[in-house]
Image (cartoon, rainbow, N blue to C red; front, side, top):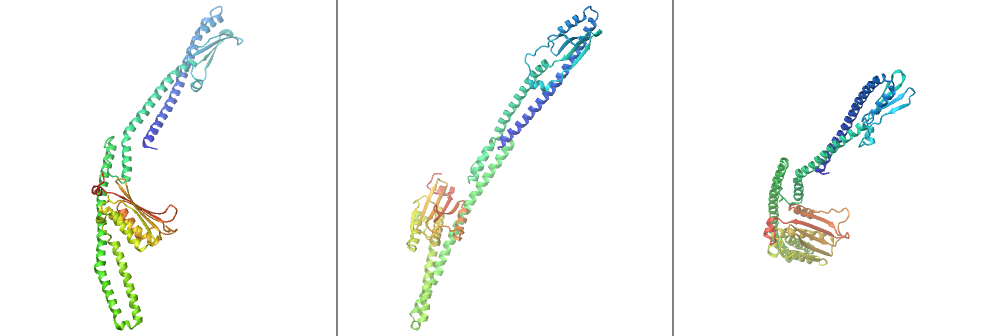
Length: 446
């Protein structure tokens, strides 16, 4: 439930409680008023009746005079009267005034007090006058007042609810911008800036958010530069290691190869077949070591992506592995242009490690390499093979894939290693972000 909804529900509950309490107070006050009016009416009626009885007892026909008195009470709002003879027969009865707008029966039952009766005996045993309260007119009057009061209360509560809804909507409107900006920041976009408007607390919140977004953007730029420097240092270390292998280890292996060839030509050694066999084995091992060193040099110091371009560099990589694994077909789909030197090197390393893992462990017959753009902000690299795939219980990340994961994560990208759609083969999919510096370097509109 949103904050605005919670506030409205809370305010609505308070207003509803106020309406209920107000209704209860109206009913309580109405009951008190009806009781007071009925008490006053029967007191006045009793005094009038007693005065009439005193006057009638001096007349020759007192019952006729009292009957006239009872008739005079017709149309009384709160009282009804009856004249009874000595045998209890009703000689005269008054009719109270009927209410113009009767109250509902449930309201009458709610606020009506118990009807009060008083019996006044006539002198000389002539009979009695009975007085009884009638609250219908009073309750109808109270009902009209209560309806007006409750209608006013409902109108006030409704206006308060609408006003609260409007005020909370305007007050909390900046929070929608904060939520949207947080979502963009969560996706890696640190550019959004929220207008600092609204209540003081929201202005402070927006100001703090903008400050945080600016600091995150600055940290992201610093991280991008550090990652670029890290990649550059790694490439320099690879180049230095390649130079050491080429300039130091290579000549030493060549020297040992020359010495072995000379020893094999020595007459004394040629006469000893056992020693000659050992020298042949050593020469064969040395030859394999030289070949392995050349393979390592090819991986440490690939063809320059900046000079050849990414497409030709990956084609060369495929040709390198095709000569060693003739049964594997390579299909490369890489754009000719549109990659900076740094981005090209990153993509090349991912493809290089993926192909190496595939041909060494997957026994594939086909390897597909594709590099595609996802808008202007990301590049998708996919390497698919149709090999044996990921076996149950087999770890997805060896040292090579772990290095790729670390490299891609350091660049702020994503790397996924999964089985093919039919369960065979492996798909390596990397999503690399394009930085602002690279976007400016490329011929791609920002």
